Length: 73
Image 1 (cartoon, rainbow, N blue to C red):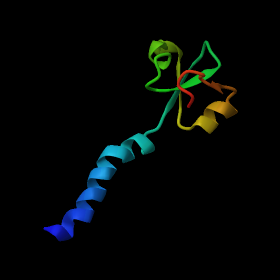
Image 2: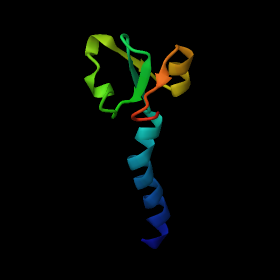
Image 3: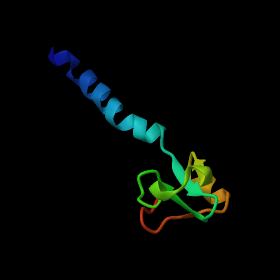
Image 4: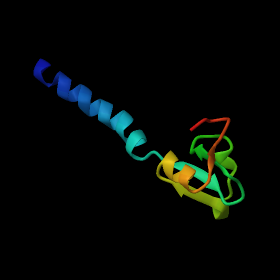
């Protein structure tokens, strides 16, 4: 059983941390120039009809958005 511990640790690590890395997403609003982490309190206030999703921070910046000063993405 000890032989499988490193595999088990890698597997558990990938289950916990990999989805947050792979599925990283940033949100912006059509009515603002800021982009946020999806967990930011200000991102949670964006209405669905105004929501813009970015896959990367670079994509948001290329589109003219600036980082939120609260969540600092």
